[in-house]
Image 1 (cartoon, rainbow, N blue to C red):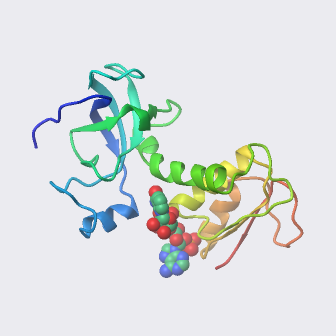
Image 2 (tube, helix red, strand yellow; image 1 turned 135 degrees about the vertical axis):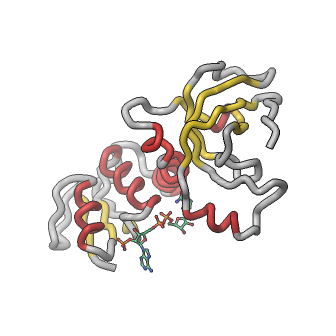
Length: 189
Ligand SMILES: NC(=O)c1ccc[n+]([C@@H]2O[C@H](COP(=O)([O-])OP(=O)(O)OC[C@H]3O[C@@H](n4cnc5c(N)ncnc54)[C@H](OP(=O)(O)O)[C@@H]3O)[C@@H](O)[C@H]2O)c1
C-alpha cells in the first residue's frame, strides 16, 4: 500500500504497536469492509506529519487511538487518524500493553460515564452487573468503576482463574451478597 497522505485534521502516524480485538473478526467477515482490507482498530504510534488544519499535535508526538472503522485499519506501517479522536499515549506502560487499551477503554468509559451517567466518585449504593467481567470490555469497565466511582460492582466470570483476576481489580471481595460500597463481587456464570 502507498503511504497515506494526511489531509485537513488528519495525522500521519508511524504505527508502533497494535492489538488484536475480537471485533476484527467481525470486520474480517466482510460486513463493514470498504476498499482495501486493512484490519485493526487499536494503534500506538508516532506522528510523522500532520494535515494543514491540525491544531493539537505535531511531528514526533507519541499517540494512541482506536481507528474510525470506516477508514483503513491499524495493521499497517503507517495510518491516518483524525486528531480529534487521538490522545497522548501513557508512558507508564509498554507500547504493546498500551495498544491493548484504546477500544476497550473507550467502550468501558462510555458505558459508565456517557450511557449510565455515573458521576465520577459517585454511584454509592448502586450495583451494576458486569457480565463477562474478565473480558476485554468488562475488565476495563470494572477497573474504571473501582478506581473512579463508589459503585459496588457485581461481575461474572466462569473460571477460577478469571474470578481471581476480576477480584484483584478492586477492593477486597466477599462471597456473600452483603455488599459494601466500592467492593467488587464476582460469581460464576
Ligand atoms: N473488545 C472491544 O473493544 C469491544 C468494543 C465494543 C463492543 N464490544 C462488545 O462487547 C462485548 C464483549 O466483548 P469483549 O471483547 O469484552 O469480549 P471478550 O474479551 O472476548 O470476552 C471474553 C470473556 O468472555 C467469557 N466467555 C468466553 N466464551 C464464553 C462462553 N461460551 N460463555 C460464557 N462466557 C464466555 C470468558 O470469561 P470467563 O472465562 O471468565 O467466563 C472470556 O474472558 C461483545 O459483544 C463485543 O462485540 C467489544
